[in-house]
Length: 302
Ligand code: AMP
Ligand code: MG
Image (cartoon, rainbow, N blue to C red):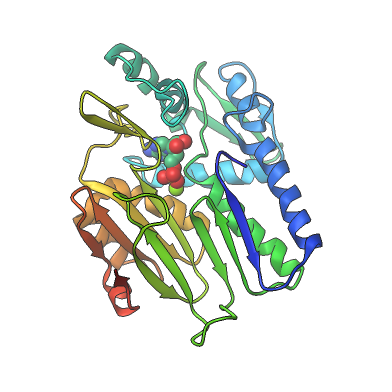
């Protein structure tokens, strides 16, 4: 689902819970996807410059949160980035290098001041034709947090939720002596499953943003899927990937994007100041840099 492999690990078989989460994800995909014409997000996008669209209240609330973060981090995280994501199509069959004019046209549509929200009616209006919302950088984190709440309702306290590498561990690991979870960090220069180290942690979210999952190479240059909303091109810096450990997965998603843009030095400085948030950067040359608290928590490289 959602263009990736999703898994839920429980310590006891429980079909009712698994089915209910499966259903939740199927409904959510229909509501939130920017890649399905019938989703609520697509309806908002299709009505850009025309009409406000009334949406499901969960959709409204996520857009509202994402807009707050977009205004807080205008240099990096931007949910109005849709026209650029659609233009580049990175990770999809139509991925290509657009020309400067096409990029310039899209850039003026990446404008969060053109997003109007009506709290009373749960309506979203994109003021300018061609504007598009894209929740790709935040939706999986939101779903992971929601699945956590569903599991709590069923009194399931220990589990692993894995939405294509967005991992949320709950409670404690019932099959290890120290009851900690071991979260492996993918080596971005190696094939899937080859990790460069692991982090032992209690219940936490681990979310990664990086260049090595969705990209293409043209004339020796790598174009990846995280777009700089100020230039219209994939962000150019020396970060290959950054993994954020936090308690909320939604928060981890936003911080991973922000940290990716900040780069290693500023990103580490920024996250060292955040409470209960840690990071592991891997640079394009393979250097590993972690926040101070994470060294403390025993990050082990292989
Ligand atoms: P993530 O994998 O969580 O880092 O999110 C990457 C996805 O977020 C991309 O595939 C796009 O759908 C979307 N996206 C790309 N650039 C940005 C950006 N600057 N701000 C917010 N979302 C973005
Ligand atoms: Mg993200």
